[in-house]
Length: 280
Ligand code: GLU
Image 1 (tube, rainbow, N blue to C red):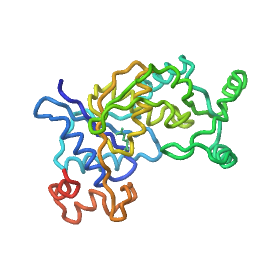
Image 2 (image 1 turned 60 degrees about the vertical axis):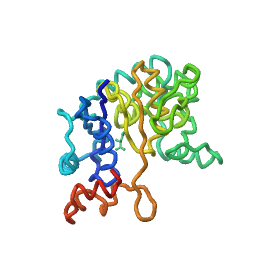
Image 3 (image 1 turned 120 degrees about the vertical axis):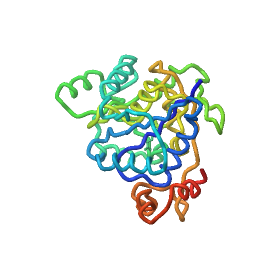
């Protein structure tokens, strides 16, 4: 079957060497010459942080690298209705609950409970709103109080068939774990979706067969496999690749302008030098 891969950057900054590796891996794995497809998806749900000039910059940098992707480019900001449908499906399964907590309230609760469990992105949500009564939930929503929607991770875990698995091309089979991120937010207070929900819906909708992305996102694949199961979506294969690090061994971030592709280009680097630098 022809491979369908994607590069899915957030237009919240300039691309750096780490993005070149992620894009290059995805483009390479697509084997376009053999009939595969390489897609570009703008993960631009984070309204105020996303800028049109970054989006243009991403396309310029990728074109400079010599990559060719299919048109049209998909923008997550234009697909909120699809995410709302998926969210509703999970809500109907009784797997979501509204969370009214502010960041501050969560931090205070975490500080109170010493030894709060840690997830890949920091302390797990301590479950304050999981304990609200159904009546209180209805009343607070009706009064217009801002709320996110969280996955009830323990309930989701109980619904999984034993040994629900997913496959990483390098590391083999994993048994999916719904609890890695705890009661993770699937729809934010300000945006009716989240990275995790949107990525799962889109990868399925776009027919992606192989998800290539950095190893930092490996824990996310557990949650994505769980969401695919609950939403009855197909599961792609995964290939998590090593991360590009700076001289201090730290993973590159968007604020590392020194490693931004456009800076390197202005300094006279060629695309071939970029590929060599990241070992592609
Ligand atoms: N938008 C994500 C990022 O820029 C990538 C998501 C993915 O590849 O699944 O880190």
